[in-house]
Image (cartoon, rainbow, N blue to C red; front, side, top):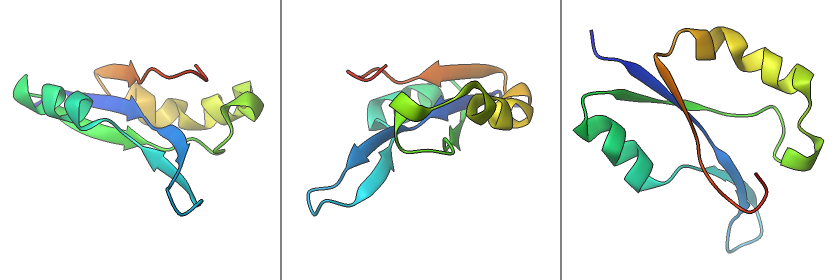
Length: 77
């Protein structure tokens, strides 16, 4: 079975001003290249400054199904 690798999305704002969640193609492609299956995990909030332990705990059951987790970098992390 191929390993599932969770990618936590990054909140962003589109050019038209709409909130969006992003993953870097380079991260996704690296997982695939090395035999994994990328699994996107969306946070309960788009504002990481208000991201609480309760929000994180809501994703724990899904994260526990994965064999790895990637936290994408950015200024807000």
